[in-house]
Image 1 (cartoon, rainbow, N blue to C red):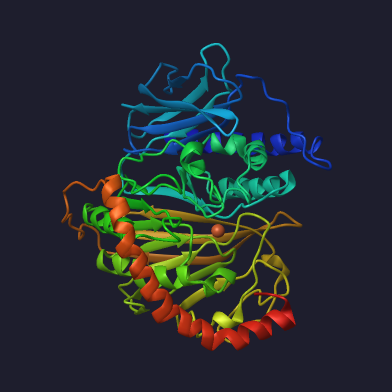
Image 2 (cartoon, rainbow, N blue to C red; image 1 turned 120 degrees about the vertical axis):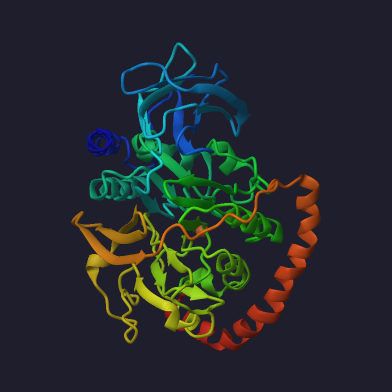
Length: 496
Ligand SMILES: [Fe+2]
């Protein structure tokens, strides 16, 4: 019954999205004019993972002027459900955000909800809760990173195609960079294109470097997340949750350039506190990449420092974004090939800003033996690499990327797809499947994993020293050795 309802909701969602997009097209000529909002009309509505995935969700929405914060959650029979806690409502960048947390829901339930002030309400949205069994699936996307409404709409079509491909998806992970410049105008265009998607499926948002762009609190104010263990919330939020037989940790790679020792300590404790069969991490910046950001110290630092935590805690899968191409590594441990290691996936962009391969990274910054699959979404730039030829190009690969993850007991299957820009055809570009023995993980940490402000700021000093050692000891020599090639590529191809 639950799966049938989910499929019906997915079809309903796709229909709504298609009509929503065609409806907005009429006002999308020239500079985008979005529909006028009422003073107390809810917008930017999202339902996000927040704490216990079986019984609790976080809701966030905005209004133009200050008004009451109300939410109504209904179960499948139409009866009021859950215990509501109104978390926060404050002015933010000219609007007012509202947050409510709903707990005491039934595991494995299907719910509808609406938000408002008790007089003016939104349309109903929907979500499902985790039933706790060891079979579930979800969608992952990254880097919508658009400015014009048209590009947000194209990205929304990609996500709509993801729901058509996997109607039973129980949540969507967005690996960050929701917008390009993180302005009110861009977030409103994102909302215009993604409104139906965002309020009809639980989201797992990941902070990207464009989500705020130096203006503090944007990310945390856009969603209602469990921040109880986050090492800081100004540049993003790190959090974790269990879903089915998996433990999922979300990292914030805006934490002092990319990653503090404090967050690494949180991650180590967090991953040691679970006995779930699967350990999966999401973060924005990618440690293993051939995109333009692979030449900077943060990518190398994540691959050489943070990866040690993944190694120690036997993480199965790390998925990130940031470099706008699809790349999957073979399993790695201690920065070497190891069948028992961690698989790293750089998610292709769901948006329209696509990066070419920087060949100068191959060998110097990334051991190409690590690469198991690579698909670049930009035409004419080494569109696909088979281990020998950087320059074979397929126009079928020019489009928005989405990924699906399906877990059934001890088997995890990851599929990556591209929705062709021109034809709308969906092509499967990679399938990765791994099977493991379940029941082997043991929880070895049960202490307090919260971070005080004092502890965080005190930890910045050793974090900075550690990053500096990596930067000057590991990154700079490679960068200087590669500099002639980098400059040659810059002069001949105008890429850097
Ligand atoms: Fe990014």
